[in-house]
Each structure stands twice: as C-alpha cells, then as structure tokens.
Length: 63
Length: 370
Image (tube, each protein chain N blue to C red):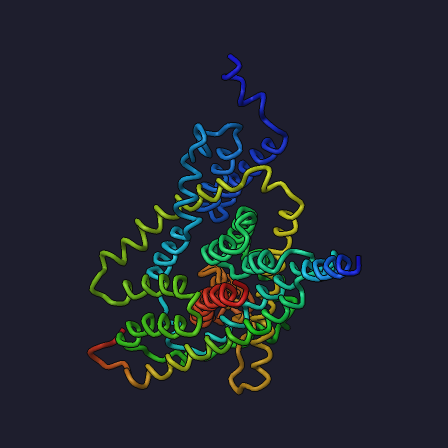
C-alpha cells in the first residue's frame, strides 16, 4: 500500500502538478538566449570591424 | 447521386468557418495587400484543405497534392530554408557592414520573442509550444516555420498566419509603441552619417563565410538557417555568379513562396485550427511584435545614457526583422517629425541587423529548447 502510494506520488511529481507551468524553464532559457544573442551579435560586430582594418577599401576595389 | 452530394452533406460548421477564414486571408491579400504573396496561397490552401473528402489532402488513403507538398517541403524544412537562400541573395548587408554597432539592436529587438515565450509558458503551453509561439516575434516567416515545425507542428497553421499577418501590419503596430516610449525631442535626434565607413569587396565576400563559420561553431543547430541565408548572400556578393544570384532572388523566391504558402494551408484544417489556443496564439503574436519594438527603442535610450553622439531611439525599433518594412516605417516617422532628418541608412542597417538577429535567435531556441 505504502509502496503504491510512493510510486503514485513519484509519477505525479514527474508528470507535473496540474497548476505547474514551464515558466521557470522558459525564464531560464530566455535569459541565457538573450545574453547569447548579444554575445554572438557583438562577435559579428567585432569581426566586421576587424575586417575593415585588415581589408580596407582601396580605390581600385571600391564597393 | 449520393456521391455527388457527399461533399455538401458532410460539410461541418467548422469547415464553413475555415472557408470564411480562408476568404478573409484572400481578401486581406488582395484588398489590403497584406503580404499577398503568402496570404493569398495560404487562404486558398485553407479552403482546399477544408472541403469534405478533399482530394487535395488525400485520395483513396494516399496523400493528396497539399499533403505531399507539406510532407516534402515543410516537414523536411526544405521550403523555408530555400526561402532563406532567396532572402540572402536579396539583402544588401552593406549598410550594416559600414556601421556594425547597429548589430546590437538586432539583438535587443528580439526581446519580444522571449517575453512572449515566458507569457505562453505562464498560460500553460508546454515549453516547446511556448518557444514556437515566442518565435513569432522573430518577425521572420521562415524562422517561425522551422522552429514551429520542429517543436509544435500542430500549431504551425496559426503561428505562420500570425507571423506573416503581423509582419504586414508593422506600419500599424510599431508607430504607436515608438511614440509611447519616446519624447518628441528624442524623435528629433539627428544621427551622423559619417559613422558609415566604406567597405571593401573582400569584406563583403568574407562576411557571409565568416558568419556561417562563427555561428555554426557556436550554435550548430543554427547552421541550416544561417548557412542558407549566407549562401544566398555569398551568391550576391561574389560578383561572378550573377545568374545564380538573380535566379535565387526571382525564380527560386517565387516558386518556393508559392509552394510554401499553399502547403501551409494544408495544416489549417478546422479540427486543428479552430481552437481557443489559436486565438491565444494570435494575441500573443501581436504582443511579441510590441515587445520587440519596445526592446529596441529602450535599448537605444539606454545606450544614449553613455554616448556622446546620441542615437535616435526610433532606429532601435528597426532591430525587429520584418525587412525592409520596419526600416521604411522609422524613416518615414523621422521625416514626419523633421523633414530634414534622414534616418534611412541607420534604419536600414539596423533592420538588416535584425534579420541576422532573428535567425540567430531561432538557432539559439532550437539549441536551448530542443
């Protein structure tokens, strides 16, 4: 009886309670993703700036 | 005789409503010119998919034309990825390369994606469904389709309709949000065009290759999205395959857009589309666009606290993808405030950054949620 109740409790926790939402996980992922986007875009920006020094526009190669 | 009447006799009220929704999409496309290249085929696709016993969906138990197109083009993600090749070939990254700090707005204006994702999660959508709903805020149809197809294929119809409808409504959605968050003095800020440095052809050619490499190494799940976008751009910038570049911009874009639109209609069946969750998704889609805009504007205001040469905060709103609509909206708003204030270069460079930002956001969501 006790084992059955314990198994039922574990199943309930694993499945999530009816009121539970994915909000905590969504918040965590959102925070990481926003930081990662700024990092990646900043990296692209740094890369472009580096290219502009390494490959400057010349008169015979103007865009 | 019974067979002839079978279609009429088996028609359900839900299917009737879907005919009306399909008709509404066609009307919006033709009368209002809201994203007609997509909404027109989606609208007709929705009508064809909801005709009882439609041969477009199934013939004698075998997949019909719409189901076949959907399985081939959407389920495998071939169509949205091919659209990226076309978009890459159409986009001139020049203004962004000339002023790379605008890339940061392409990051800030993705805020709506994550706000909406959290909102959807709070409303008891699963994490994967929430991510698919949030990605409407990428303001980028193909990214929305790829993410939704991967995480919540059952929500693909409403998510696609929301993404494309709101992209066409950017001129209506963005201006009030921008006005609400800025003062007139801020909207009158003039920006220095000398920030735009000339860019060499080598930089233009190396850029798509380097972006593919960096993004691919950091976020491998984004390789397909960014790789296809950058492939199209490389065709454009290489200067030696003009025929391919023009083919991607015209023939490829037209054919794939046509097939993509009508295939999306295949999933807009009454039993899947007519759900209270569809209304919630449509509502959250608009919230995503509003918070994207707010994210970009508020980030510009934040940067202005530290900058000597101030940024017009309206430009931050262009970090939303929706290229080039958002750039045009802000340019016109700038002119309306001050006819001598030409923000076109800044707005377009920021908007191009937004296109890149939305694809990166899509790749990150695929990596973090998947």
